[in-house]
Amino acid sequence: MGELESPEALGSAPTVESTPNDDLGSAASLLRGVASAPGLRTELLRVGQVVAGRYRIERTIGEGGMGVVYVARDEQLGRDVALKVGSAMSAAALARMEREAQALASLSHPNVVVVYEVGEIEGRVFVAMELVIGGTLAAWLRAKRRTPGEIIAMVCAAGDGLAAAHASGVVHRDIKPDNILVGDDGRPRVADFGLALAGDARNDVTRAGAIVGTPAYMSPEQLAGAEVDARTDQFALCATLWEALFGVRMLSGQPPPTGDTARARTVPPHVEAALRRGLASGVDARWPALDALLAELRRDPGRRRRRVLLGAALAGAMAAAVIIPLALGRRGAAVCEDDDVALAPTWNPTRADALERALGAAAWSPVRPRIEAFTHAWIGAHHDACVAARVDGAQSEAMLARRDLCLTAARAQLDAALTDLAAAKGGLPGGALPGLGACADAATLARQAPLPADAAGRAALERVYADAAALRIAWLRGAANDGPELGDRLLAAARATAWPPLIARAAWVRGELRFPAHADDSRAALQEAASVALSAGADPDAARAMGELAWQLAIARDIGSARSSVELARSIWARTDRDPDIGAYLRGTEAMVGWLGGTHR
Image (cartoon, rainbow, N blue to C red):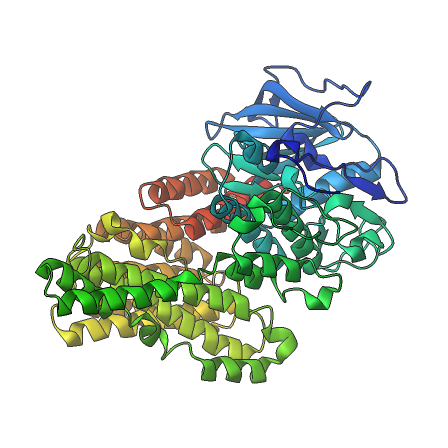
């Protein structure tokens, strides 16, 4: 294909499958309003009908060869959901729908459509999913002219969700503009996991030799029916972004020349180079992992240049004795340039090389992008905290101290995760690297008690936070054999500091460590942890503790209490700065509660 005249001309090629069974359609395509095929209309449910004792049908919003999707009201939790009901009755088709639901339910990320529950009605599979009000990426691109920066940011956010799928062992295999939903909140979600390949699963649909996907976005290996992996999705995401930026589609699986077009001149050269690498014919020539690609796409080559210019401006201002406040502000900016140094004791080239030697290149390459993405975010958060207090004057030194302690605790968890990684010689467990949103949530941090004024008191806090991080990593790895006893010691050490937020953190970790050997005591400890955290102004830890409590209650089949706990956790989270990592964790917990409360009762 050649140059397209406008974003409005960008359509979506059809999904093509060449499989042993011709009735396997893409189940989740219903969510994006696929047009009905003639004669396939199947009214399965009537308005007002209640499914699984909780979902009241409101209206139909889409249908296709695999079934119908409705807007339904979850009467237990008081929210609207998308309820997809299969119409095809073949075992293979129903297996496809269940496989998609299982792939989605295993994920927990703000940029992935959430599955709440899977079940059956009248012999047909239904899936209750997040209702995304908005449209597709293709529609978002058509709605108005978008800048390259806006497009890159939107597709990279969707890429974060896809990277989370890869981390869970799920390969999507049909990434394209119509399979990325953009909600009215501006947040993209990856949908349509109906073609997904989970882990090492192999069957008639996912085996090599089956051509599944959308040709305009397929990698060469996928078009050839060969084995696919996460780098296949990388190719499709790059094809999607290339099309959105340049207005041209792939030609025989290769990016065409951009030419000296107006669009090409506005796309940063490093972005085009990154996409060309992701679109390489050979899988080994692409980026080693999606995280690495996303980091390069988001890289701002001008940042260091702006710093140099800022320094020159400062020198000139001081030499000319211009306005004193300006000079002081610029001097403050220089004070905030030690972010790399602050992280260096924990993360540096020497430690990275040692980890690569310990793990081997094959095991290290998928882990390193996650670590580097976290360290990049940490450095940015550290810099922002300093600038807010010492350059802009928007926050006090007391708030800077709170933010620094929060980042110190996060750095301690990174250190614990790296130490565990070297010892276990395996991947990072889920939740090993914390979210950093809470460290920028000034409103929540302001509710916390004042920090100790003396250096010794502050050092004691940092030591206990480090101990809590090490214990939690061991628990995530399943290696905390003396968990209950160690949890008791941790809580005692935290109480000795007399600082309520740290006591709340220790109580939460102690509650986790007592499970499953002391399940009842664990749940009591988590309730106490949530209560202490709320009174201490540590809302993120309160939300985490209530989420863990919900998970344990669901395992104990106390589904009603589990639902109440996860709803309370979400309410607590909603009044914070809505850290996306905590939000993703809670959505995953909610999906698990729904799953256990549905098909696995």
